[in-house]
Image (cartoon, rainbow, N blue to C red):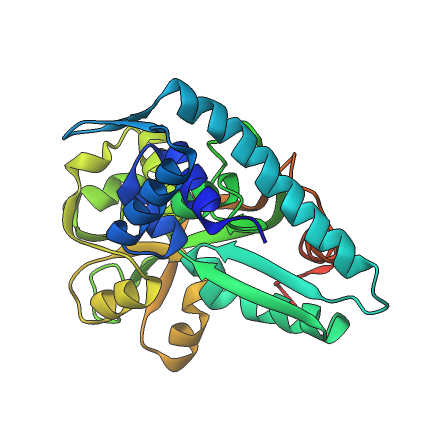
Length: 299
């Protein structure tokens, strides 16, 4: 209900980037620029200082940003409370999830939630953990499910699952008969990595550092943005990789890939993130409760 131009301006102001704002809002950069220029024209004042390499907020822009955040939050709260006045639990929830969670864990949760709240409308945005967190901060997502610890102090985080990570390799790989893999063994093998910003990438890099292995010393043959692409590359014999154990169960059953535990084990907390200041409708709180309390991905 809030003016679209205000939402676009607020997203640009948060990122100080038209490009990043366009990605978050699923718009083209020219469309974002046009919306901001329209708002500046309506207000008859410049909200950004522009240079070839960067933008910054003017004094008017900083003031407008504070009001925009309040307006957008109040608008969302009003819409949620009006929905709650109806007899049925309905409304729209926008959920963000990192790729591993979205592909291998979220379908079960969405099915459970829709069974309990059939009138609810769910919208899903899939990206890496860093992008999900940024969109929760921007209030363009109601809640996010990510694979790494949050980097934003003003995000509320709740662990909802402990995920095991394993090494995967082709059936004819030299590691095929090993019962476990140590961090030092990665140095001698072609390695297939997730892209920067991935929660899996961050957790694996931290694990390597803890065992005195510098990630930049690995023979990274490619960086890929999806688990499916990584599994395909490993199956083709292009290298080894580290993935969520839950993401490779099907390939193990079909005899396409081998999954080998790390020694010591590598586990990570999958976390639910949302902003403290965001109004939590009954529907949103029910979703949070389902994820944090009722859901068992092992079942």
